[in-house]
Length: 104
Image (cartoon, rainbow, N blue to C red; front, side):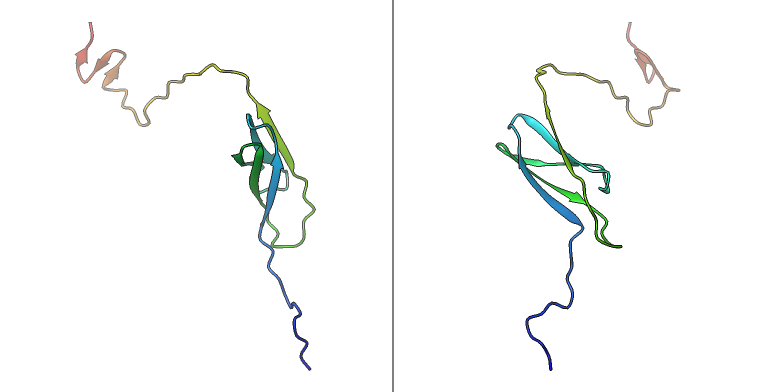
């Protein structure tokens, strides 16, 4: 006799979908020590945020602790940084001189 409409197995994806609200000027991230990447960014729509945290549930069930981190910035200033070119050849370059052409 075969019983109908009964599950014999199931697949649980390795992520948790997290939804919430925070003021729309906040940057929201998700954090968990159980997570594969510790911090996970979120997407925003007005006051609502959504993020997917990846977990490894291949070996068994997990008890998860997830924290949402919302950061407000009142700073309207800007920062600057000089990033040198990768693999720059210093033998042919001097400050103010390049390929034999020096500025006076």
